[in-house]
Image (cartoon, rainbow, N blue to C red; front, side, top):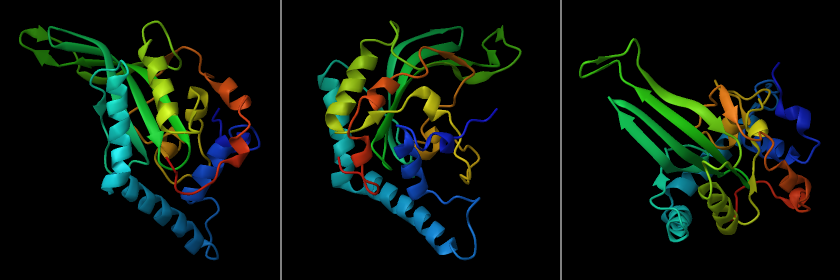
Length: 238
């Protein structure tokens, strides 16, 4: 059964719905009378993304954050931004191995939304298998994510916790979106992938079937936060 974000819009995560609704037209609600207003949402989103990704002063905020990670125990964080994504994206390789052409890597994918005060951290195990590798015959090839980690684990720490602390230090007021919320669908979102993750981040994470850890982490941080109702919509202020 598909779970929709709209079912939670009166809860502590209702601000997620408000931010998405502010920047994305709802195809279920578009009519001749409000078509212009819905188109304005798309233009606001595109203009904001363009500013955050292409203005030197704005983008320097993200680059300074990556440098801050390097100074605080995380070596060589990767900058993996792609044009027109509604977020800044990075990756930390924790461990990797290669044998007979088969490659495996454990990493942390992290995204900071440009559309609202939200970020995500997800552990990912990646596997790459070639079809034919110098005498080793494989029946098929594969290159993708085989497992996700929804919360900190022994495999991911101390990098996960360092990353969480540094994001919240550099991006004041931003909240870590729990995995179970990232996977909710947004009814009416005009997209091939209508998840909260797609709308707020559209990063490199692909929701593999196997998920370990606490999918609700860190929802308690949201419940205990008294500033949720004071967040403002529109361009974010770092």
